[in-house]
Amino acid sequence: MTSPLSPEVSVIVPCKDEAGNIGFLIDEIATALSGRPFEILVVDDGSRDGTGEAVRASARQHPQVRLLRHETSAGQSAAIRSALEAAKGDAVVTIDGDGQNDPAYIPALLDALSAGGDQVGLAAGQRVGRKASFAKRYGSRIANRVRRALLDDQVRDTGCGLKAVRRTLFLRLPYFDGWHRFLPALVRREGYEIALVDVADRERRHGTSKYGIFDRLWVGIADLFGVWWLASRRKVRPQLSEEKLDE
Image (cartoon, rainbow, N blue to C red; front, side, top):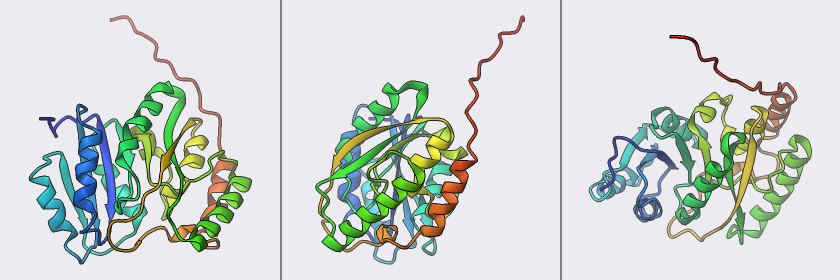
């Protein structure tokens, strides 16, 4: 059995009121990462539906699971940040807690991150066959066009929760509410490249979306211009080498 003490990969699952989905999702993550040392950090963001109990039940089958809890909901960005600070893996994978992201794509993201070497800091999923409503897909399409035009981050879909990032880089990125939606632009600002992986979108098993409000056109415009300002202040990342000193 994989030891939870020395994970190479930390999977972060922010969730709010996802008691009907989280158990299935944990099972799928464990299957996708079978053979790799990993941990699963579930952040219960102020749920009131028994999400915490569902996670505890899954942990009896999967000792790699760790449960973090916000007593009151602080939002998806804060949930990811809390787990990031507690994570132990060198690589961090984010995935939405509603089950619409398929964990079967996690190995492909990790492989893309590894294959890119030191130049690639983020492997980002891009959804195909989205299952959202027409209004949400349309609003998201317009918002993505505005974002690409302003930030030139060269990513079609930043709203996909499936991403793999080097933890040391992730911790260096400037934090603000909504920052997880701008990871490609923020990673490029640090001088790294992005690897893109197409991933299939899925229907929810249970419940309705608690996060994802940013997909509406006008929400997050202030953040968009803030990230544009940050990107405009970017400096070229210096090439670093360490000189071997005589002992």
